[in-house]
Amino acid sequence: MDIQEAIRLLEAGRLEDLDLDVLWEIEEALATGLGSQGYYIQFKNIVSGQNPKFPAFVQAPLAERSLAFKQVAEANVKALKGIEKEVNLFATDDKGNIKNPEAEAVFNFYRQVQIENKSHADKVTSEDFFRNLNAMAVLDAHEKIYLTPRFAEFSKEEQIKAYENALLMSLQETAFILASNQEIEDREVGTAKEIKPRTIEDKLSQIMSGEEGSKLKISNRNLIGTLSAGMNRLRNSARRLSVMTDENHLTNEIKAVDIQFIRSYPDNYPAMKPLSRGMGVSFIAGPVGRSSYGAWKISSALHKETGIIQKDNLFSYIRKQPSFLKILGHKLAKSISQVITTILCAKEAGMINDTVARNWKSFSNLLKPRSNSVSAQRIEARFNTTLASINAKTEFAVAQEDVKKTTSLLKEIARSRIGQMFCKDKSTSAQKLQTGKTAERE
Image (cartoon, rainbow, N blue to C red; front, side, top):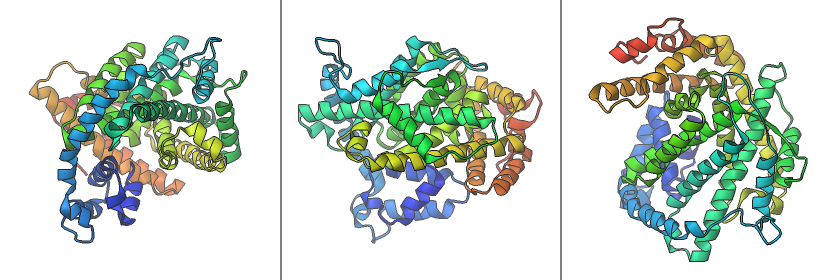
């Protein structure tokens, strides 16, 4: 969640109606945002039960509600384990046809994707393409189920249906994200930044049809960047769940899938993991970083719209509400244009080039898990502080929605002491971080 969305939800005055995980996201965004201290204090005053205008928090402050949710999450974990083995989303009939029509449509899309392997990114094979996307979809569905307040109380049939919809939703949303993100990669080097909503509508319709011949080229940069953005979002969610409730199932599941992805993409994926604390500046990490930034922005725009869908999956909902496709086309086209503009501004400001990418690689190598020593923990803490600072400044610059203002602010970041850690062409930047000689917070 970005700072603007957090402020909007706070000012709407309906915090009591929001789910716990949304409240956790708002708190984190306000706590780390640039110039949001006043909003953060206002938020804490409400959720700690000090504001009588919000009686639900007076009766049960957020901290108490969060700790109490641990029992709910644990019950959901147990319930999911009880039915998961019975779920086969892609089960076929006697003729070999997938029984679930929505599953068949999304499977046909992924089956027909043409992978384009480009330079500066690990090779993606057809064998690991869908397997890894499906692994992330399982984690995505687990997150949703664990955070569903009454999942454990559902009937067995309701639990199976909810889990199937969660799996489908993730695979369908990721298909939309990949297609939209490819538009960014294909247009980024050109001069045309605007994209017509109808173009995206047609692309989304093509994906939903699942018809033979509905082929789409997806680059290895896009796939690895999209996986990285999705896993970093899940990593943040798991961290919040662990901190607020001490429930660690999702964290442990993510670690297991991380091993699989590192084996598939040993050069790029490990370098993207640390950006879970700085997704707003992930474009500094080379071509895959730019794809990850695009996927993050597109998924954020998509999730704002699809959050209204309950007890259904995305394709099914659109078929029942055709006008929703037009809404998505408009929102995603706008997001694509904004990402391309941001990338062009960042390039002009000196935040995207080979030097920055090399520096990022050096920084990320420092964080490879070699030991749990105090020294390693200190390096990670200094790294996260530096990254959080540049991330907050960058998100503030991008939020201006004015090319000249954004570029000017990004140039200030690149020239600042913290910015120079990433942008200046010198081999000692990572060494300074390792020895603790980082720039002070500005």
